[in-house]
Length: 152
Length: 152
DNA sequence: GTAAAAAAGGACACAAATATCCTTTTTTAA
DNA sequence: TTAAAAAAGGATATTTGTGTCCTTTTTTAC
Ligand code: FES
Ligand code: FES
Image (cartoon, rainbow over all chains, first blue to last red):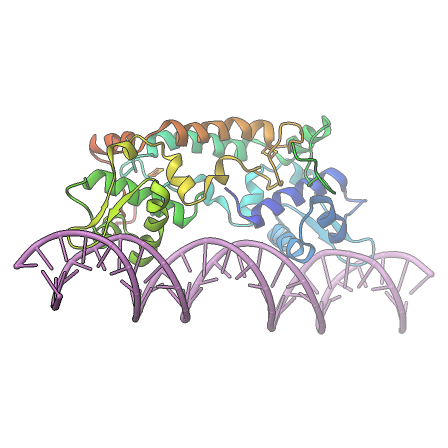
């Protein structure tokens, strides 16, 4: 569905929104650990998310790090996908035709259209803050279980 | 959403089901042209689809080619995804956690679960024949428009 | 049985995605 | 004003996905 880049972007942003604030900025080390992602690769992705006044804010130097402004918390999840250029998932033809088109549809178009619409809505109508709220209800996770997992 | 491999697999299978039959087998040349895909790469993908008595049947030699049995036409679209090992799209966590789990859900799980269920149903409940029927209603396509396209 | 047609298979080439490492710049605190 | 901390940036490595090409095997028609 999504690339690793997009997945890390989503998890990292949620993590920063969850644990960080303007006066408790988070370092890349902590973020990568918190979401089980490769540190340097995640750093690159955070660069995309901070560029052009986008989703994440950052400050260099001691006590620096990443955080989200209140404005950013209200952004839709889609803004994260846009920052890493991964919006195609909500626009592409499921069979890979050059364009998904109402006038030149593939045989799965009618069925897939409805699903795509919901996907689109999920990413557009859900704000980052809503995910934080959902997480804070308890028993939600954005990292992988550490250690050995019992086979079910 | 899907890999090129899966997209070509779906389009090729639909094309073969549409245009071919046991006594009108299709060659790789025609198939690749019919769905706008790279010929040799598509050939490799068709190998996956013919192995282990799966979705597509093939015969070598003169008058050989690819076709679908009546049995195969009744298979769900999901069988194509299985053949190219691309089922993960209907099982993965949208945030890329190792597993999508009801007991260890990510903050998007509740919303995404409903969408994933529909995706799953689409692939499981739709047969290859149904796509052929849909196509035969007219004004459906599995190839890309040739030549210059007027900008809208 | 020989030649041609067609898929199957193997090896390789290229590109994109993922990941790591090292240097540079900015900022703060002492 | 200097040292340390932290992100930004650049270069490169690794892996995976995509794509091509050539040889081999199977099958058919003559
Ligand atoms: S044309 Fe294929 S999904 Fe719309
Ligand atoms: S746990 Fe993330 S989608 Fe189910």
